[in-house]
Length: 400
Image 1 (cartoon, rainbow, N blue to C red):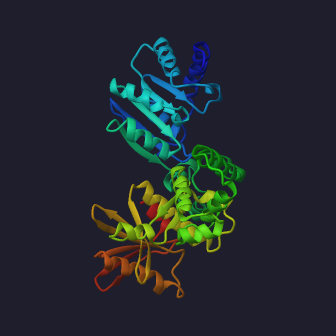
Image 2: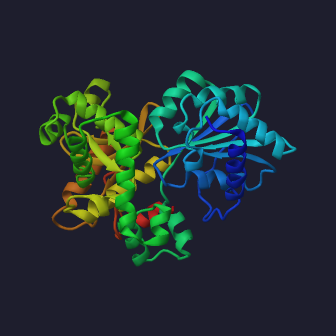
Image 3: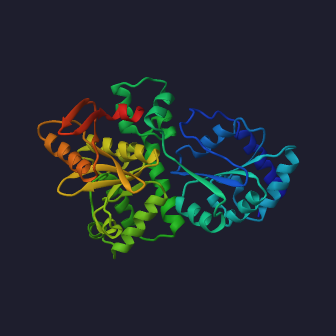
């Protein structure tokens, strides 16, 4: 519980904070409707609250509560009633509600449901997809609009540094990633501390886990081996965990904290998708650079990770293809694979046949006439029989 007079001081201070500079305009659009809660979720420190504040700059009045504020320690579900009384006192017009990191308050969904049932406009941010989705599924069914935010894309990065594309700028983005605070400070320790925060707060504490050493080893191994096929049996033996089910649960916790994503091999059989080797990709190349144990073949897999994240930003349903050969990504729309993408740092005599044949196999398997081969800086077109392969630099594809 928190006293009303103390709560009022905090809310007035937070209202002032809401007006501070919102920085680079994000490419992401959000929608807000009466009687709906708009949910913005994503990894910690990727700019969720900033995106909301950018949208709310034109709003006439906002009821803003940031729950990671230490001054709201002790805030409970029943204190929402006090907060509403305070907002009614300090505002003479109907306001949009904005709750930042609301998952910190137990039972929050009950109050939000009350607001949306009254036809209020509500924006919510959160760093943990699982908690939000579980509570939304039970309490806000049909009452919410969900959107995910990621660290800065390459186009957003260029806007932040106020530069046009160049090789040096792309190299900086490729190695440093897109977390806004790091791009401004260039302090590498920030990315190491960020992963520690995600690990302890969004993975260990939130899921009440105990096997800290094994789970940390699993996380660092996955980050260090981004894009490599692996089986959960292998991971079980590697980190000395009792069962494959435990590995599956830990990977799920990594995904719900938005630090890693699982990519499955495409198959018409869901059972085969589940049992086939998986690939894991990381939320940000800067996290990889500063936290991986080692990263041989660094550049090619960094490019691959960038391509994966961009496909996620676009909302694509993504798989990898593997029969006798392998293709890095295929994207599905409806019941069909619509796109095949291969990624390598550069085409050379040692890899050309492997990369092209893997892409061609995916194209032929899914009856595609066009495929993409993304590289660091190569650009060309290849016609093989009736198939067209577009060789495009990753940076150009990202900006396109």
